[in-house]
Amino acid sequence: MPAPHSAHVAVIGAGPAGLMAAETLALAGVHVDLYDAMPSVGRKFLLAGVGGMNITHAEAKADFIQRYREASPWVAEWLQELDADQLRAWIHGLGVDTFVGSSGRVFPVDMKAAPLLRAWLKRLREAGVSLHTRHRWQGWDAEGKLQFQTPQGSANAQADGLILALGGGSWSRLGSDGAWVPWLRQQQIQVRDLLPANCGFECDWSPYLRERFAGHPLKQVIARVTLAKGGEQIQRGECVLTAQGLEGSLIYALSAPLRDQLLDQGRATLWLDLAPDRSHSQLQAALETPRKGQTLSSVLRKKAGLDAVKIALLHERLGPETLRCAEQVASAIKQLPIVFTATRPLDEAISSAGGVSQAALDDKLMLKAMPGVFCAGEMLDWEAPTGGYLLTACFASGRRAGLGLIDWLTTSA
Image 1 (tube, rainbow, N blue to C red):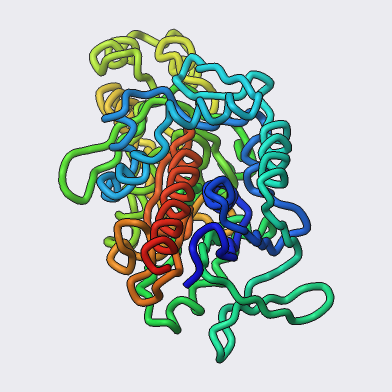
Image 2: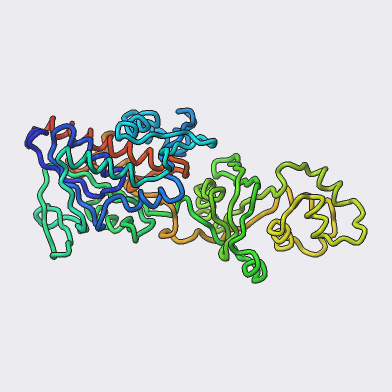
């Protein structure tokens, strides 16, 4: 095995994890061939920057780590190599300034992903990274060589070490299509099924609600979902009523426990507080006031502070008898059940859960069954909510895998 300074390694996948792995290797003197299936790199990264490039989060470190749910201890290991503060310093080193928004989310000053990516690619080129686009990985051939499909036909490549950063299964048109899953399983690598994360959910709306209110925002509500291990997850925010169900930032934040419920029970229940700043007793008192000829909808709007979408949801879920009882209507406003029957398709999700199991990897992200082959990014079995957590862990896992490969090359030389 050649020493690191004379080794030629391959990184497949030029998203944040793959680019960070390539940089880590190249700055250590390793020659890197970086392959990507798309005509240009960082496609999903650039899409994430539309409307504002949320790169990481300024939340306290202990709280930050807990965002990764069951995978928190694992992801915490990666963050030792590159945490949120170190990531901001790295971005500043590329000549891109950042700021912390009112929500704690961290953005480039110009809010754009493209300038950051351009500066990063310039650094990689100067470090000697060779970039090969339109190279779609097809697994290994009988001799263990990497197989690619290119516009010129099939091509093979040999590498002294390999980092796979192939993404998950969402947004296949940007390159994350999960095509790698069967190839790793053929190598007896444990890979959990890819599932939607940060996704929308479906429920059976009436034709009236679907036709009249699809696309309307559901503003300032508190959502609650029961957790499988007991307790609840509660989130305040906004979402959007769609023709199929609900989606948006509030729903994405709760997508993991909702998906768990669906897998376990075949349905999931989200409880909505439509008037979070009013108590049950205040609402009941307002609804018991004589109407003086006003309709229920008018009373709900004027005295309970509900808009047309919230009123329509009440009518959707409550029968005529219930709507005549002020106490029951007040209870429903504070705790309205929305039953989901399915997630939206994986390809629509912002990210995916599942992937290469932690048990299949050592602590440096090398596949135990394939020495010299490392994995990084969203293809690993972890998930996180939006808010910069996804990107931070992708960057950090790329750094972890790059350092792991350098160490492997050194000890194997």
